[in-house]
Image (cartoon, rainbow over all chains, first blue to last red; front, side):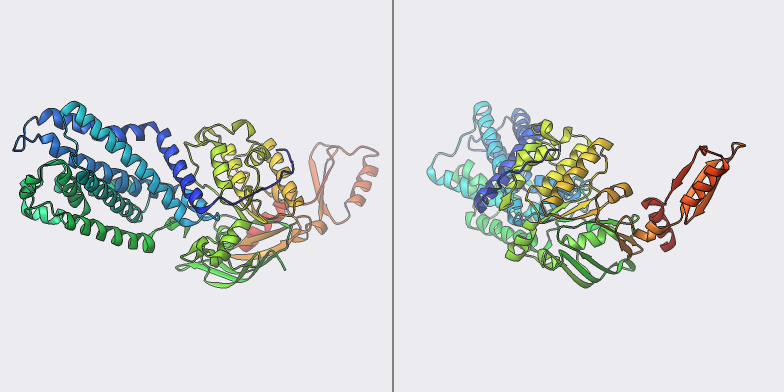
Length: 275
Length: 290
């Protein structure tokens, strides 16, 4: 430990710069944990490989099952990256005292969340691109054909990932320890996937199950994505007789508001042990 | 005005009273060591001062600001709280590392939070991690992780630095180097509040030590005169002609030694003259309070 006098770096990082730096830090940490990268990015692609190889049939009008299944996988990918990852990762960081360490610095609190949001956005984008690439190369997935459909794809995905991310942050206060977090979060995510029409055609589910699923964002996210990847005529097969995009926007938007309110009021920076 | 001023601090967790009325003053530029057994209220007291914990009662001023300001919902969104956080460095026990990042990446990142941050490379060198600057933090040993904690605590050039058992896991050489770092920081005008279980560390570094037991500050003094150690009886021990050990406690050990020298007509076998160590005094105090 040597002593030397150096001039202070007399500059303060701008707020935006700080947020992006935090995002860079999160992305770097993600990319360096190989298991996480493999599971998060490859899992949906592997699921597509499995399901695409099992169900080679069509779901009517010459539309392949893959065309339906890819919407569920994109939705699941967004939910995993936003909800599941954060609801597990944040309690772990809280347990390890990472949050407490940030709390003891002048870092504005929002910077922590900005870092998480950028990380989620990065993962979600990469995952979706890989999924679409695998599906179109191996299973002949038809990508959206019109600018309108791409625009719908964009806003539904953005709103969906926002809702999932906020829900993930809000849900991070449910698990009391990092160790219990996967046990608390995984069943919620798994059940939502089964009842929201990710693995099965939604309308083939019991009506009561459809009604329960309608309370949660994943069902609407998938429905919005179906409007992008399935022909317009398939809207008639949806529960309400159409893809009902306004309702998709409304429900996802309401979840954003609700989850944000929960984040602002219940987020825990320290564990109970820390007081 | 003192760097820290505490009057009548109280904090209870349900039925358990952790801090039962603590008064404390720490001057600017002072190194103050807080000693006390686990569960005595040491950590609670320090965490109130650090702005991590709410208090039930009492007045607390740290660098002229009530640390509770930093605990509002706005946190560092409050300009006073932000400015205060910029001036206070904290080295906690067992805070999380960023396993996949390198030492340099973590220190450089934290430097962004402060308006007058020190040069990251210099700080890494000061804490003795220069050779580990490009190593991922999960490859560091316990003592090296602790050094990284210290680096993050001082990167913002704090006016006041809290160190919670900073040298746990250090080997003796690293501990000496750390002591030198603390002396350098003090020479630079930093006020330091230190908790430690190593009594020789408190003695080597602190201008004053405070002993907390059962939620109360039972003594505050210089390490040399804590518990009237400087005027305590000395113990003289030696070996008799038959080979047995003999000892006596005396206020005038020099006279005892002179007497022994006369009796043995020269060298006294196995002669030692000792005063109570800080640890002896401390254990006596803790025992008395428990």
